[in-house]
Amino acid sequence: LESFSVQMGKTGFVLPLRPIQLNDQHWVKMRVDSGSMVTLLPSSMKPAGVTLQKPPTSLQPVGTAPLTPLGVFTGKLRYNAKEITEQIYVVDDQHSAMPALIGERASI
Image (cartoon, rainbow, N blue to C red; front, side):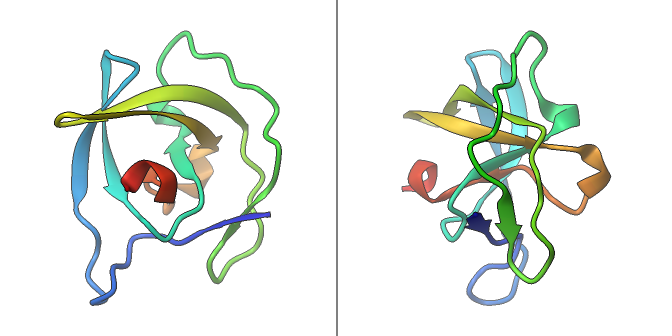
């Protein structure tokens, strides 16, 4: 199981949303969460034409039951001058409390 946290920073405040360009075209507002082991995207934010692969693992949100993602795809994330290629896990929108998150590897 990969673990991730949601929304809360060290001071207890909600982490701010950042405009992230996904695959050189699609803009998504995401929270940078350096405590999350994965980058996470609700299904309504998945770019058209992206094919999902079988996820290699379930996800374990902090403090709740495990979450099975719909799939995973490799995407290019860009924020200001920084760009990284990252595995992005897509979750069902029924988990609307799950914001789009940039995980640890992409947040560095």
